[in-house]
Every structure is written in C-alpha cells, then in structure tokens.
Length: 352
Ligand code: NCD
Ligand code: ZN
Image (tube, rainbow, N blue to C red; front, side):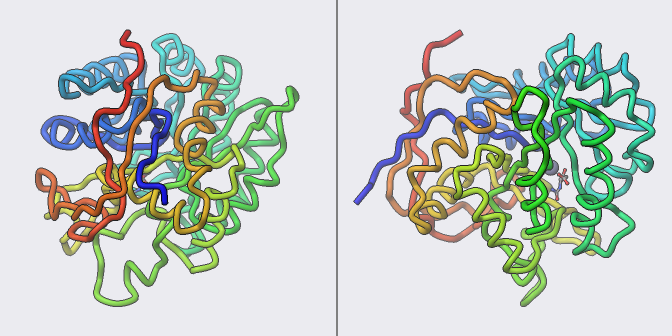
C-alpha cells in the first residue's frame, strides 16, 4: 500500500484570496501547499487594471507567511469598460489572465458583462498579447441548473469562432455538456489546445442533493451549482482521464461563517485547506492516483505557458480531522476525517 505521496509542487489555477483581514486569515492555506495560484479579481473594489493588479499582488505577497514561497498569478476583471489598452497595460504588468463574469451571475459580479461580444476588441488584444480569457460560463437568464449549458451552447462558440487565437479556460466545469464541449473545442492554428477547463475539488464530489437534498447545506452552496449525478460523474471522469485540457482550479472561495449561514447566503466553498488530501482520496478511490500529479502540477502550467514548478510536496496516509473553522471560515469537509494529510517538509525547490 502507498502510504506516502510525493507531488510536484502544485498550481491552483483558480482561487479567491479576498483582501484585508480575510486575505490574512486564509492565504496560508494556499501558500503552504501550492506554489502558484491564479487569483481571481472579484474583490471589492475589483481588480480592473494593471495598477490594481500590482497593488493587489503586493498585498498578497505581504500577507504570505514567512517561510512559504508562493507566487500569485494575477488577473483583471473584464467589465464593459475594459479596452484593448487596458489589456496591453495589464499584460505589461505581468497579468496572465482576464476573468469574464456575466452580469450578476455570482459573488461580486454586478459589474459583469451583459453583451459579451461587445468586448471583441479587448478579447482580440488578449489573443495578441498572449493573455488567457478565464470564463465564468453561466448565462444568468437561464434556469439555475441550465445556466452553464446555455452559456456553452450560445456564447462560447461565438467567442471561439469570432476571436481567432483567443485562449479560453472554462472555469469550474460542472456539467456533462460543458465537459463535452471542452473535449470537442477546436485547436489553434499552431495545433495547441485553445480551450481548457478548470475542475474544482467540490465538483468532483457534490451533487445538488448534497446542497438541498436533505438539510440545507450552505457550505456546499456555490456557483456554478453542483448538479445531477451524471454531471458530477462527467466532471470526475474528465479529471481522472489524464486529458491535459482539464486541470485543478479549486475555486476556493472563503466567506465568513455568518455570510454563509444566512438568509442571503453567499456562494462559494472554502476548499484550500483540504484540496490536496481530498484529491488524493478521490484519485485513489478511482485507481487514478498516478494521474494526480499531472492534474495538479503540469496540465495547467502547460496551458498557461508556464514552466512547471520545481520541488515537491508530500502527503502521508494518516487520518486527520478537518478543523471546524479557520479564522471564522468553515472549510469543505469540516469536522470529517480524511485519509491523507498534507505535511510540510517537501522540497520547495531552489529559492529565487
Ligand atoms: C465565488 C466567490 O465567492 O467569489 N463563488 C463561487 O460560488 N464560486 C465566485 C465564483 O467563482 O463564482
Ligand atoms: Zn471562482
């Protein structure tokens, strides 16, 4: 039996770190296990420009505990006023991706986009400078369980067809429709994949039953919603398959307990503290443990054109009970026993 697992230092290609006190409370749960994280821009106020991204990067770096080596990969939020010039300046400041939220579809997206194709010039600039477009692929006007499928059917094909060479990540895939679409999306002229998807930890496990099928479970409430068993199985199969177009983006989305356990509960699951141990469990349960390393450590980097991380992290097969609370935020699987645990003492690789 395997009782120890060594992985290349992983990337989390979709996470929410927030700012201020909440950032300082949660960042260690990402900066410990992960070498890099693609940090979402839906803070209040949002990250819209090169200047905003530089300031936010500094705030994150200052919050990372001493001894952790963590590189925040920055994003800007696409809003109706985003221009080609916004994109070029952001790229020059090292921003790697821009995030598109349809208007009103999730946490802090009231300033999102209604007419996606009105931003064609900004998207063309992204393609030109090599910035990835990260998409929250849900159409707000559709029924909640159909929002992702509607976006995949109606909006994504136009983005792919009308903006040649734009590289797109469909974030947190949650439906069989979305998984199939990613698999069948066209490649670029250079033969490389143009379309990929992030997969969260919770969408590998949850269905809507785990949210509203019994007692209401606010800590499982997220956007996009966990859906039918066959959707969950399609997402799981994609992650386990070894297809390089599917890679980890936890969408770890901390909200304070009072904002989750509320009459107007916020969407988001805080998975960072348990991401690697839960993934080890899932991949092991499906006989796919040898494929975990690429899912967390190389597919995403390759799509983003980043060198894979140096160094390793270590997990050991020793049961541990997930804490009920981390600084006022309830983590995924709180209070349950996990089979694997993350241990410090991996090789962080050369410093610099
Ligand atoms: C995210 C958040 O809280 O910022 N919430 C979520 O349910 N996933 C936003 C997002 O990624 O949709
Ligand atoms: Zn997110």
